[in-house]
Length: 393
Image 1: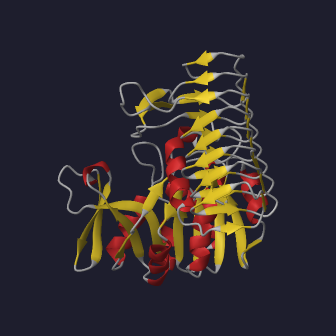
Image 2: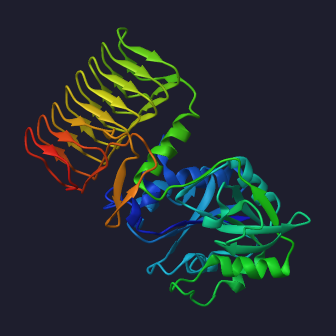
Image 3: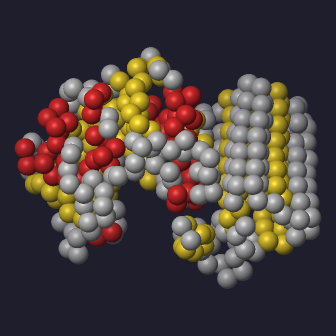
């Protein structure tokens, strides 16, 4: 069975992190977000991976190539973002039998994905507290009878998680009319499959839709928490590593450093001397944490640098960000309310009591810059030495 993985979107809600990188390629633990989905499909027995690409497509091609973990990889280009059914339809030339459809910006429970492959046709769901906010599965006698969008009186608490196993005939049902919002929806294809087949519901133990920056933090908290301790890099005898810490070969941990896991220090990264890393923290390839820096529960993307005497908490730094010495991130409001963040021009609640800054690729701060909670720094933005920044830049 082939797996169609959707990875063509622009990821506008997760900006500025997706300014020059597709959202599915953002880092989650030791690989891009979409690689976790592809790995789940490979582990479930996929005979081929068909990646639907569009925005910044070359980054996806470069990572996966023509063969990934021994499984052939094909590509279908979606030039126009016209809905999920449209995305799968552009991949239809690669399909000739039953197939699975997965989202490249979701994290899935791998065991459930294995069951999805085994029980085709099937649809995955997640139990939620407020199902009226989602598309909800109706079930009877162990099969799915309908998917109802945001019902006032939900028939179950099973929210549609957007992972499907389709019979071969569904390939011919992908050309559905546009919905009211102008998109060709995969749920119309699902409705046809439910009419023609007994569709099994598969319930996830855990699932995450990574759409906004704080959800990328949550994704890293999940996957870093699954690591097993491994020390392959160069670690000073004067460093202290507690809990689940992975130091890849080629990484350097200098004297006086304290790391409290879960934490992943990737190849080429440098920490210290005398730095403190705690919480679920990813220090990606080539990133640097300087002298007397504290980093807590954050993502430092490839090539990011945090200069000495700085603090970064609950934040995401894009590629090649450079925080000047003494840069301090505030991650907690004085009124203790949830931190807000700008998504597509509107301030929305992150639902997190602690949330720092999101810095796009190439951001540079002057020394002794102060950054307030929920701050959004667009790619290439700069600050002056000693500047307090309390508005998005």
